[in-house]
Image (cartoon, rainbow, N blue to C red; front, side, top):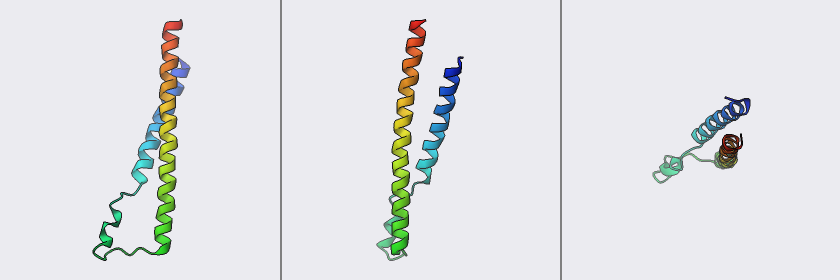
Length: 86
């Protein structure tokens, strides 16, 4: 195993853990189902706070996922050309 394989493996592991954590921190969309029965106590501050945190987490989910996808493609290309080039 070369150093580049080890580095890419560690980066993939860190990014996969980051994706899992960011997705787990997001609130479900069924959170506001209690407002129909009147059991929800949403104020202006809690609505805006959760919306900004949710949008922040959604944005980072996209960024990390795209980065993960690009790194996987780069690893496959490097391994393909390394195996057939040498």
